[in-house]
Length: 417
Ligand code: DGL
Image (cartoon, rainbow, N blue to C red; front, side, top):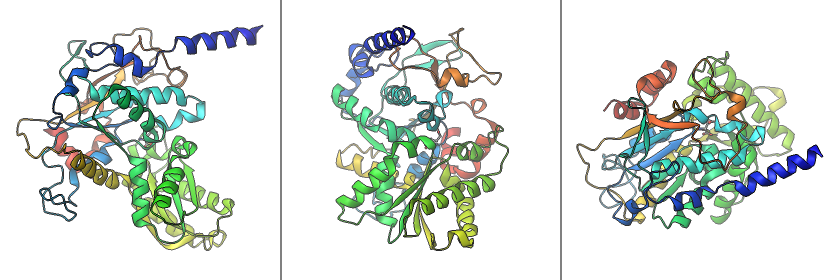
């Protein structure tokens, strides 16, 4: 009887669940939650900013790669540096879904359905004008929409890029979408020679199989032989790199453990080619490339791993390839903005638990309670658990701020503007 009742409730829920595509289409003015002003896309979108989103602040590494890119001639569009940043005329809107992260852990609790909804909500936020002003305690409608969406998060790309593309098609929008996983696979195509590929990513990204799939497709389409791919998901490394006090280990220690787990998995897979290319398949990992490389150097001398790690390793940072992909996509759609607008500023947003809601379980640090966060079901678009507010310095933990200041100088400068 109890089982029947549960089944009935679940069925009832899925019938009632509202699809985000339909919901946004039914609210074309963009005033409602999870909707956007569709009329904005009837005009020329070239002058609109580029949207970049991640589960948190890690995606700022991708923004840094975009802001630093100079591998094309800005006028002729031909490959080759010209001394000018390739995105010199563009402005950016960054969004980090800090209140709902880590995205990498939704798969292990069986909640990828909710994660997929979060990812489409992130895209809708970038497309729309609506944001929450914590000073007045009300929503405002003056954020510019975006002409392109960069999914800077590996986990979000793995689980949500197809949903975002399907939704944009449904809405008939000419918005470009670029994701780090496809771009990372293109990086493997360029960097990889002989041997096997190792992927270090979140547990969720690895569980999705997105990297092995994308690498196989990309190399296969290029007529190349498809290498063995071994993955290792890390539940901790992103947090350790950010300096999250919940983790007691150092970056070097954690890299040592994760590199060892990857090589062990490679050994157990029976693959006989040594690992020769390592994909840094999580936004944070390029920040720890030195520690990751030192870990592999140490492991190479262990007898148990003999012949499993190539004498030199190539590293693929998907952020760099995403920046190139974005340039090409904007150029071929003739959506590049050539004219830097002096008064046009970038904007940075972050999500926080909805301060209007008094029923939310909140921790002492002001975050959503973990059990609540990972227990939610998709389809309830009436209640906003989180709202998106400007990313002011006091909303970024001190350790993260230091990381941005020291490792992401372009972003740091734009944040201060
Ligand atoms: N940004 C995520 C990624 O690249 C890492 C952090 C998270 O799990 O949310 O996969």
